[in-house]
Length: 124
Image 1: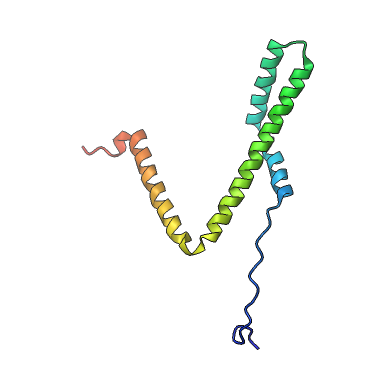
Image 2 (image 1 turned 135 degrees about the horizontal axis):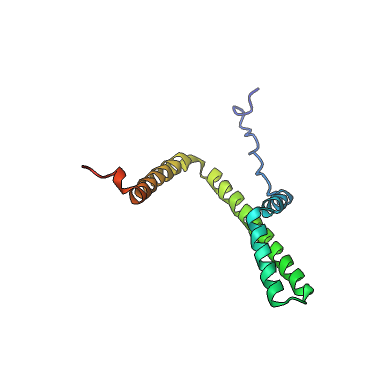
């Protein structure tokens, strides 16, 4: 028998849980990038230049930098996940939202092209 016809509604699908270990591992993986290494290197070199004999301050500065980079990437991950959950919740109006975003992106692209390439829109 079909459950929909006898008044029994199927259970709603379970919400996906926020997987903090997955986000933390992605934050660790993303925190290891050349830009962060170059900034860390410049930071440590400047600390060495001002405090040549104080190794403890160099260690703590590097540790603070690494922790801050990890924390920022972790928060970015949480924000991205929440953003996509909100987008999923807007399922009925999602296509309208995408159309508005596409038109806005097209207008911004045309304005940027006009600014960077003035001869593209010149009429001679």
